Image (cartoon, rainbow, N blue to C red; front, side, top):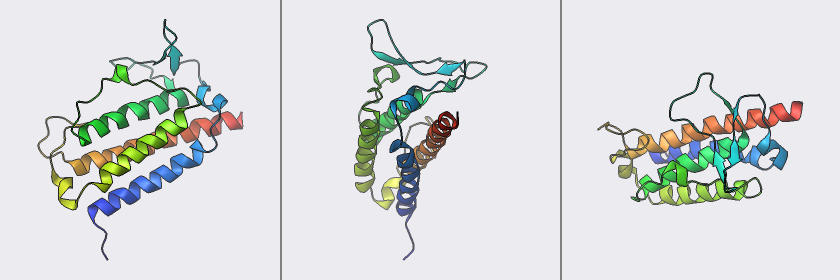
Length: 172
């Protein structure tokens, strides 16, 4: 049987998730907060003690090295917004996405995956051709299929970054 486009996108997500899960299973508190350079983006307590990710609306030069804490918050942000779009909800604002902390971050990410799988399970092949606006707006050719492929690519990129940081810390 020839796999459908949806089958291939799901396979790609499952492959990417298995690579992320490899690192999540081995992640510890020290990995999450590891700062590999003097210039980093991480999650810091704000004036009220709430965990707040570093951010700039324009890309700094040089670009700070993200910590695993920042990367996991970043996944939570973009995946949460993708879920909002896919489920027809108003997309959440970046500032409203709270990092749950080192002890709760792995279940948080696993829950995002579970929610995303529910979205994928509710789609049919024809749904992939419907228009989408996240993360690309104002492109009439951008579809739900493109958005799912983007989620897979973004997750793979963030997985590689998390893995590299975890391995770098272990090698030190």
